Length: 116
Image (cartoon, rainbow, N blue to C red; front, side):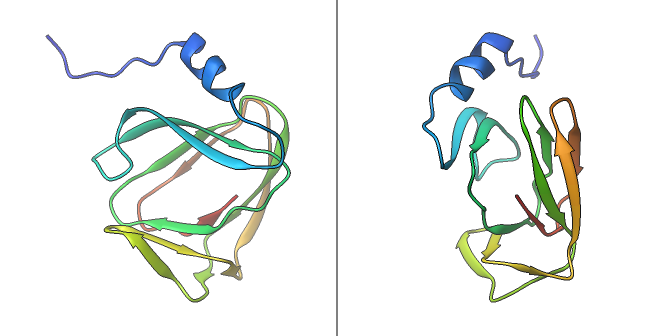
């Protein structure tokens, strides 16, 4: 017996195609947003998200298709805490902007501000 989580490609593809245009939507596949881990599909289509910091959770993003920009590091402006261990803001000051495209992986450690 093991405690591993396997997410099949078919589940990722189904979740990724289930959202509409011009949105940012997250679909949880396993774990929990307020747990030790979460596996999910986040679709961002033609919108700017909010800045985020997770106190304990690591974010690993795999870009399935398309391209975009990640804002990494910097300082959160007027942070809010929507739930324990998570902070959001409308912007990050002095963040590095990184271009990403299909096939790229972005590994964001706990405590690192980021915005998509």
